Length: 270
Image (cartoon, one colour):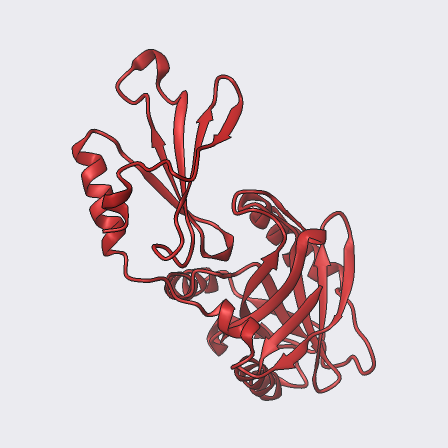
């Protein structure tokens, strides 16, 4: 797995860690993951081909407690993190807050997560990531004034080596920072479906995919929720067509519909 950090992010990281040194510091990284799986499949660590730190935010000084051998983001920093992450993810749909970044300024030649690091953030983050379909959590630890050691956790902690600093114009960073086209086309589609009695439910997936779930048996109490049409919109839609799947929850089946299938496709692409 290749782990990279954008030069602008690295500058912000080094500046903040220099500010608090020799105490430990903490930052909020947002990462983009490239992997071999399809948009709805669970992502295992071995499936990931690259991990890019494409955005980073400094935790406000008043929301962190810095000590020589420990740093803590205070409980009230959760509200700040929520308000920070949501606009960034909306702007850059491929980014996720799936990692943690702090420093071990006392480490010279190498470092690794401490028991506090593992129990305090890697394990809780792993549970959160699994709920979103990512079977791993990540920890980035700056050391040696400064290098960025990278670690992943599944059943145990493994080292990913040091991150590679790349230019902001590097293709992997540009892909991570891709924005979604205007959503007017999606609003029209939702409005027309609702006029027909359907209520699509949307959620965001990794790689900028958007998933819509439509209960096709909404008018039948006996069959409510049995057949669900799942529509997957890629980040570059409408240049790339959406994918359609028919899920039968009672039968436990999922069938990909023919590429020529369209649920009012002319409305979606309008």
